[in-house]
Amino acid sequence: MKLIPIAAIANNNVIGQNNKLLWHMPADLKRFKETTMGHTMIMGRKTFESIGKALPGRKTIVITRNKDYSAEGCEVVSDLKEAICKVKSESNVYVVGGGEIYRQVLNLHYTRRMFITRVYANFEGDAFFPEINPEKWELIEREEHEPDDRNPYPYAFLTYKRKC
Image (tube, rainbow, N blue to C red; front, side, top):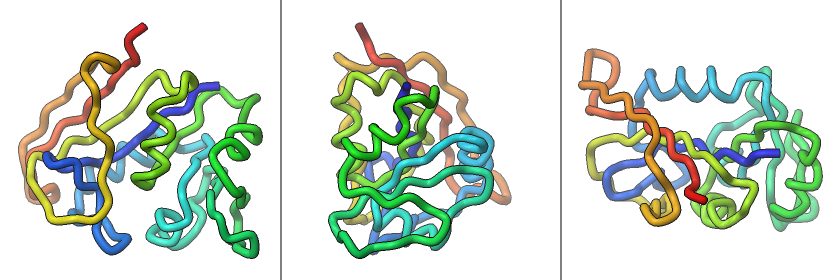
């Protein structure tokens, strides 16, 4: 089993504020959908609530400390360890946020790749992606894009691989 964080991150590592994305980038949303379709996604409760529903074509596991929490169409677990136990037989499992879940996942040996959309702008926010340590992570693929009529900021699709 591989845990694969997937995130859109501003230059200053902001991923959101007040439980919302701070930009609308259809190219990133398309990549997210194409990458995660047919796979399991693990996310924290706040991330799930910001999406608002279980996304079609994907199994969703929501992590929360609230033992009474339920989310229609999702499995609810109390921590990352329990989520991992539920997906051990799967090959690729995508971790989609939030900041605390990303922090936990980046240090696990199950995490060998990351798919990042780097939005080349700075934003004020209250949720952050952890610093990507170049001693631990190697950039293996970079696809640069200029802004266009639908995507207002320059951005890059980045793929990282954990160094041995």
